[in-house]
Image 1 (tube, rainbow, N blue to C red):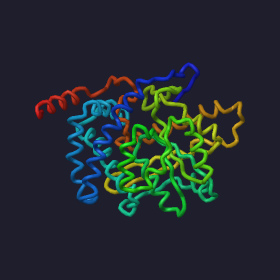
Image 2 (image 1 turned 90 degrees about the vertical axis):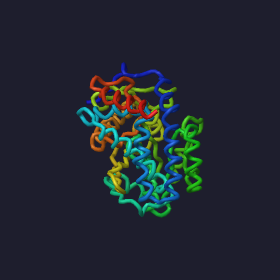
Image 3 (image 1 turned 180 degrees about the vertical axis):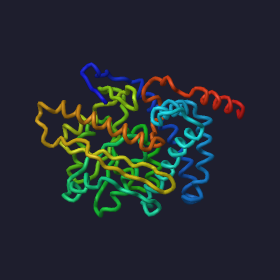
Image 4 (image 1 turned 135 degrees about the vertical axis):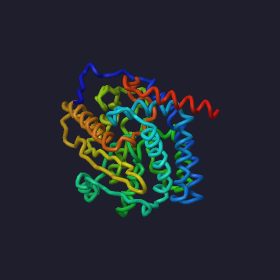
Length: 332
């Protein structure tokens, strides 16, 4: 059970943000650049063959990401990990980045997308109300664009750390010029105002809420049996905007199959001002509950390739990592 107490409040922690801000998008950019070049020239079916080479490369030559995977997988799988598990984790990541190229290009017909929980989002869409979607670096949030393509006139905006992802957005906008127009940059003085404006216009506004920019309050949650730090900013933003919030995850299920899930997360529409903090705590509890459920449902879809818990578990499969390091040295 997830518990949040006053004593669990965490001061701003630049260490955690520095890890993913410095490392994660850099590795994403390299992989995305490779994927983009291959995909646009060979097509999806042929270019997927190259994913195996790229996956092997990143397993061998990205030791930090490899260690992060070996720290996470035993928690999600509930058992020691094997080479196959490690490979499936990295391949799943490569596959979703590869598919991002086609999703940006409106090539939705290439995918079999199963949408579950439509009843949690359709009423707001039908009424022309904006929907605040909250997700995590779990699966592909990019498949949310497919929903926007299915409903005429429905537009989608993403809230993200644009400064660090600028190169990625530049590449994606080269594929689809509209892609760079629907990104709301976090950390700017008018970020929340822009979110409110998009919601008032009836747009779907998506935000990944499992990472911190560093200079913000955080709280402790129980994630896969261990304590992890979660930023409270996204939840407080939703509360201030007085909006219903829907949890969304787009899981990659292999091949061309994706499974989108919508779950009710919180409704801040009519929360009295004095009860806002309590409502935020309840929303965080619900968010943690959903993260636990979906990471176990689709364990290879977790794409936080840094030590999310900030410490390795006792059952970290160190021998496997040592063998991989030795093999890499032999190659070098």
